[in-house]
Amino acid sequence: MTNVIVPLNAFERLEVLKNGQVSFIKLIAQSGAFGVEIRRELLPEKNLQLDMIKSEIQKFGLFTVYSAPIELWREDSSLNKEVLSKVFNEANVLGAKWLKVCLGHYEKVKSSMKDLKNFANDHHEIQLLIENDQTQYGGNVKHLKEFFESVTQNEIRVYMTFDAGNWLYTNQDAEFALRELAPYVVYLHLKQVENQCGELVTIPLHNGGNTFWKKAFAELPINIVKALEFPIEPKEKTAEYISFIKELAKESEEVPCKS
Image 1 (tube, rainbow, N blue to C red):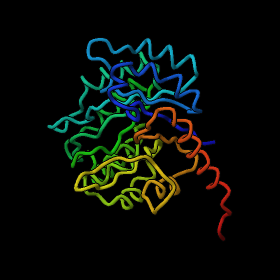
Image 2 (cartoon, one colour):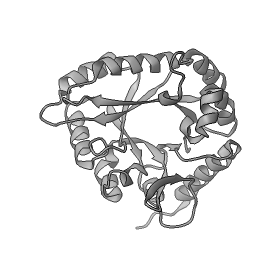
Image 3 (tube, rainbow, N blue to C red):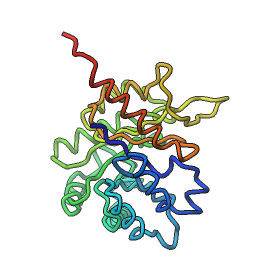
Image 4 (cartoon, rainbow, N blue to C red):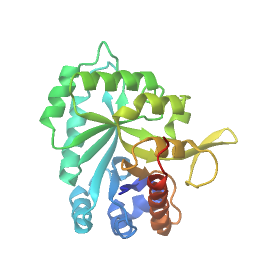
């Protein structure tokens, strides 16, 4: 079974801001999605509307991911406890099972795994995920590998969201990143990024060409949760893209093993 998540930043930003993320839940559910990724940066400043969104999500039985653009480690490499506590509380109100944040300024020698372990234990009801972002420090393969090696050694339940397109923004070798980080990945953001006239642009997925997102799709476990993080325009094409991903997964499962 292929579980497909639809993040709310896949839709036209102004429409999301005007009508609210809650207005897209029914469309996402009826398009055959497994779940939805609610984006904190697209919520109203004064009233996050989390209860309203949760009620709509529960109506359709969708799995919920909460994405917050905050950094796990502050500039001094200490744990960002106050802000983390705030977004964990928001995720709890929303009914999210996963909370996705960025790595931040992790340093192997300075960042306290004890602090992180205590925090994770206190918030064990929600799974913390770290995504490779578009910063030079949070999207760095070496930093991410050292971090995940450390949480594994310290038996801390923190896993990775692997964004297939963000490596271009940080000038990292995407295939090397996949080899190094695959053991920690539980969530795959499918994104195709191209350089158009010197500007990096995210475009809709398509089946042609030798694209990196397809390599990540093929090499990570077939049943891994996948998100469609690219422009879906018009929004009515959501079902078409979900069917596309499910069909690719089905084809992968049908490929005979090589001996």
